[in-house]
Length: 567
Image 1 (cartoon, rainbow, N blue to C red):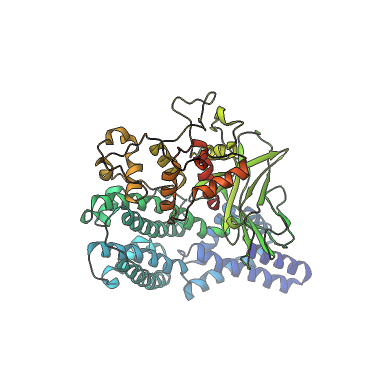
Image 2 (cartoon, rainbow, N blue to C red; image 1 turned 135 degrees about the vertical axis):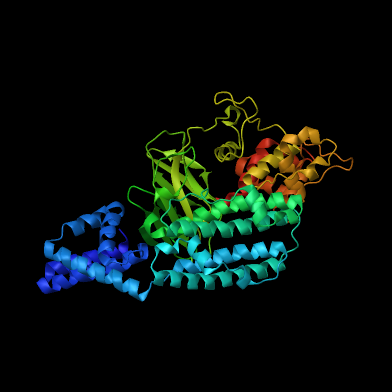
């Protein structure tokens, strides 16, 4: 039950216990009046309060059985007082009109989408020309099902939001470079997909539909037509479509969950943790442990339990509730060399379990240790400072076992990358005899494959720039990855017109590529090799010659360390 409504119910119950009949009658009426006003925000389609009351009872019987039983147990007089209050509350809300906060947001989302459409068409900025008619807006959001006052209020708020969203987005588009190239296509596609995904999530929320981002996701052809992508280059078009689809899903799911926050979340804990350290724990659930000096000033831990209906788990088997955790750190100071420990009770298979974090709609494994009936993981304080994270315990029945890394110095990093589906075994791998060959050098193509997975590259179908190489036939299976890396300037070919994907890659080449990927040519491999030596007691051959070939284990370690901030 909603916490505010629950508190109201408790207040009324105590009032009934402590006061006389007239007082009790007024309390029953007031309780019903509040419920009537509240239900109008859920379903405003009834012109008669009596019909609305019947629908209200059906609704709470499904959504809030405890409340339904409480009302059903009222005596005849109290029940009638409650019903009278409900009908008056509902009809007053209808007569006064209701605030439509979602309408303005929906208008902004559609306004941004239409602004991008007009910009790509080469049209001038004109939100009035782009604005759908009142009839179209009513049809888009099924407003015929609502009262006349609600429809009028919704359309007015929608138009106001549309103007704001349109003008803001068109102004941003004018400041961007012309639409050409893969990078620009990805960026523009993500912007358009994010706006549309948000809009349809809000629409589905309004209609009480289930969470399903694929319900209204346009096809590739529809995206090309809607945004007039045939006017741009093929490279831009393919990138736009892929960026659109990726961001549509992320935006839709995040927006849908945020609108259902009251229903999908149960606030469990809000606790101050001193600079001297401490623990925030939920009974039979998640706990957060902070060591002394991790934060230089007190922080505030907030833990909420989420409704699992709004999450997808893929092939994983859920072994805990889902929690969001946030450490509010007003001072903003911390020691990122220390770790925050996350723990869950766990009683299942001791090898297949782990703690996972939801990142861009994908559950990502956090290196976990099992001790008795507890599974725990350590994360950087910066990943939780003033940032909300969503965590759960899962069992992975498809976990890969790489037999040649069990005693290797990079065992933890390699196994973590395996659990994150960044690393797989060699061709012919089985669960019994799979190998990783950690001491073997890694090829240029293999390195880009791992990089594309951990960076979650969006890979358009456009591959023309890769086909220009004379040896393209040797890397046709990698051409999308190589084409993307070429378009971003991460890699270049050789002067003889070849790419040589199967050549082992050197420490120096890796240093150049990682500097470009990070947008900072200050990346220095020797600094990482020094950290490796102190952390793992392993001396890299790069100290002898920076042009030596990097090993597969060193790449796994490097990518793990450089990407800890994501997890």
